[in-house]
Image 1 (cartoon, rainbow, N blue to C red):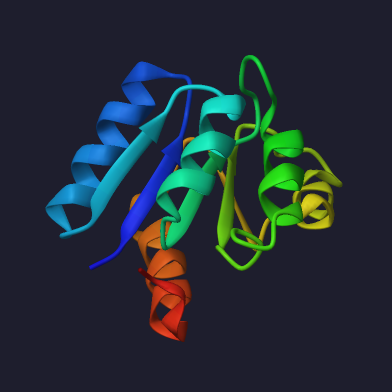
Image 2: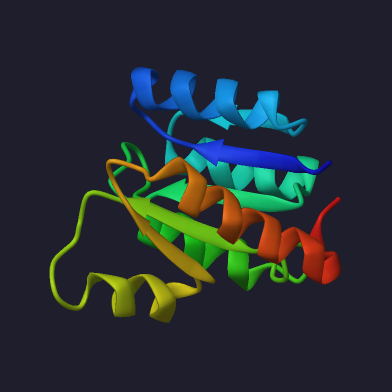
Length: 125
């Protein structure tokens, strides 16, 4: 299975998602803010990133831009996780470099299908 970086500031969401992903066999790295997410993406090179968009220190929009701007991390798939479900938010997520978009509360079976689709393309580490 793959290493997944979960960038999420809400402890309850982090706990729930990380436990469910680990049960599916994935290794889960945690970052609690956008700056830590960028640093871990660069140092750990995960197979996929789940990025909350409303983060402290550096928001998910800017963290995604920074990750996608580095040649070493530009090809890592990023799935935006956001409570922002307004018209245009999906497009904004894709514009900054996210490869997919999932609204909160997370529909875990649907999210898992998206994760597996990216990892099955050979992008997983």
